[in-house]
Structures are given as structure tokens and as C-alpha cells.
Length: 275
Image (cartoon, rainbow, N blue to C red; front, side):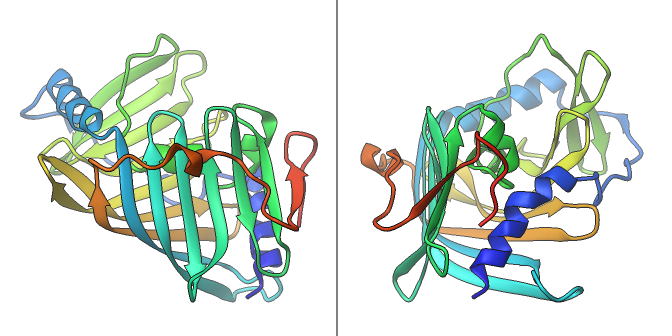
């Protein structure tokens, strides 16, 4: 597996993001049925019911080949997804029972560890400049899962419109009007698609929430398709969850940052790093 080239691409795409992908705006009409307040209340009630997640995960990563233009590489990994809101996330993937990578964060730090060929950890402080350099950072992945509450913000203006059978929430910066986030809600006020934008208003991620499953009394998405768009190429990620538990809190030690034996550490807050 060409992990060194692949993750050099993943670390470098963000700087070249140019808003490619689904940027054509749909024709919007006044939202029918539920009011904006009702939609947000229903979503927040569901999100509030998801305090933590314990799940087995299958991850498919499709990326441009690092050496051959027009060719793509695909990696299929099995592992787990652990979430303990609001700050803790851990996703790992294995091949033949051996860890190949981990992606994690806690309140202080984020990290990405890749073992094959490079055995390197890319890390930095939460909210620091390095977090913006890591494509599909743990914070972005958490936002794309659709389990975070939507709270009012003085720095944003908000509108909800209708597009077919979906209500569309759009959030914009008050100063300048650049988009920040857009969420498509289905008839049950569950996120069906989440778009995220960088501070300049350029789209950095689209997540499609494809399938929900009832876990206890709560609907939980168990199939995601995510896309990150660069100037020329795109990075695709498919995440499937099974054996999902909402009543099983992950061990807090899972979210502690540790440097694996023999691994090199690259601090993304100091300067852009490549493997």
C-alpha cells in the first residue's frame, strides 16, 4: 500500500481546496410543514440523546494515486468508531487484525497515525493552525456524523428553505456573508447531507448520511459517504457502522494521546509537514 504518498495527499489537499464539487445551488422555496424552530428542536432532541457511541466500523478510502495521474487507489479497513461528546473521537482501521491507522482527538490534541511504511503520527493542538492542515480532521468528521446539536450563534445568520422533500438549513457569516454550513433534513428532521465550508466560503466537505437505524429509542446514521474536493481531484470516504451501542461509554483512556512505539511525531502546528 502506498500509504506515504496517500497521506501526503490527504495532508496537502486542504491548502488547494477550491470549492469544486456540488456548488450549484438548488432552487429554494419557502419551507412547508414544520417551522424552522420545530425542525431544529427535533434534531437537537435526537442529537442530545447521543452522548457517546461505541460501534464497529468498516472504512473505505478512495484517493488519487500519488504517482499516476488519473489513477485512484482504494483501501478497505475494519475497526471501531468511539465518540464521547463534545471533545473525544477515535477511529481506527485494521488489515488482518493489525492496526494501520488511527484518527483521534480529545479536548487538547488531535492526531493521525499511519503505520505502514512510515509509522508516523501527525498531531497538533485543538484549535491551532495544524488542525486546518489535516484534511478530514477528527473535528470535521465529528461534525459530519450528524449527532451534534445546533445552537444559536451571534456570528452567524441562518435560514431554512425547502428543496424537494428536504428542509435545508443554511448558515452564513454575518460579516461578508460567506457560507459556513448547510444541512439537508429529511421529513423526520434527520440530517441527510451536511456541507462544511472553510473561512473563505470554499466548500471543504460534503457528507451524505445514507441509512439510519433505530438504536433503543434513537435514530442513528450507520452509513456515510463523504467527499473532499480539491482543485482537480477528490478524496472519497465511505464509513459503515454496525453493532452500534449508545449505552456503552468508551473507556476514557482510548482518547488519550500516546506516541506508538518507534513512531515519528510530526507537529503540524510548527509548519506544514509531509511524510
